[in-house]
Length: 187
Ligand code: AR6
Image (cartoon, rainbow, N blue to C red; front, side):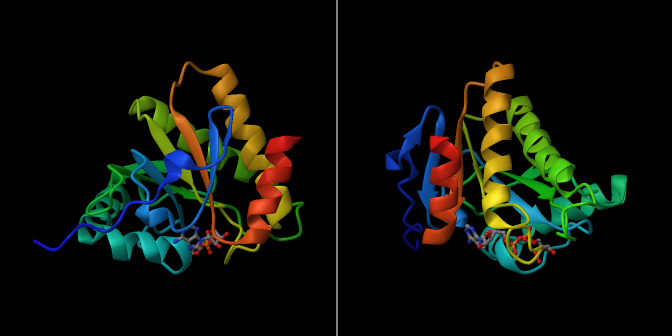
């Protein structure tokens, strides 16, 4: 048996109430769920989507195909749940962020919906922990500081309004993104 991929130590990451900020690769996290920045096709792509499908294997794509057959993909702002396949995480929640078009095409509202709907699925599954990448902040071009502020605002609002007892982990890839989250979390 090959030895398992070393898990990321997200439990030791800085805590801001029930939110943690972890810098690294989301595919290594053994949070019960991780969130994918998918596209409307649900058939995979680049960025974190590509990394999640590569690491999780074909079971994730197969589950996505079944969802497509049932409901024809996933609209921006919505979220769907699949197995985590071979990932350390049990579930993947796929959400589709808005493509940044200057900020007047409902991008902030759609991005907020991504966090709300993903957290609602996490609550439905009663997961103990859920990790988010910066939805829309890569290929889709959403400004990172604004996106971090929305992510933090929505997570705090959700944790305040719901009985969901889980931990929310924000996963950042680089120092710049980390600073934006720290600013939002300390505000
Ligand atoms: N772990 C954590 N964060 C990551 C990882 C990783 N392994 N890889 C990238 N990031 P993106 P989007 C960060 O482009 O902007 C795909 O093709 C990255 O630094 O993955 O929502 C989909 O199929 C950035 O901050 O997602 C869609 O077509 C963030 O994750 C499109 O890209 C999101 O970057 C979605 O674009």
